[in-house]
Length: 128
Image (cartoon, rainbow, N blue to C red; front, side, top):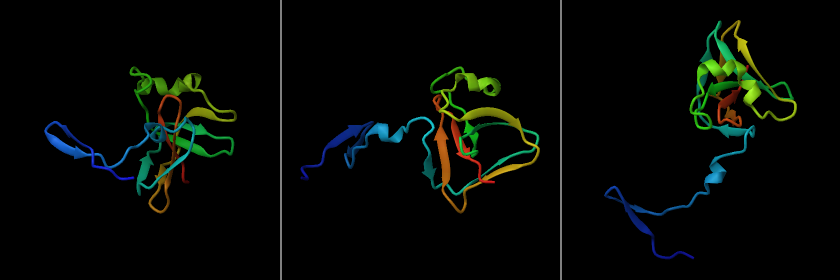
């Protein structure tokens, strides 16, 4: 049933409630895969160190961002040894790797497959 619209004012701007979203649906469990339509190409240069997860099927997931939500003191210097802090599912591994050639994660023609670890660091499935 539709009733009168609920109106509130925030910072001098009148708002109307259009929808209610359960926040838990926006925060998936760690290591659960989500698809994102972002039409991008991430490029990681040869010679650079990357940090990746490898799942039980051998798929590699490259870290796209590290997060300071769970640990405000986390820095790039911590990433090579991050495995000891991750609650990895059975069969998963975390590793640093120096690229011998350029790595491109190209999602221009398909949705990106992304996930977060238990520290809210984000990873994209490698496409090549």
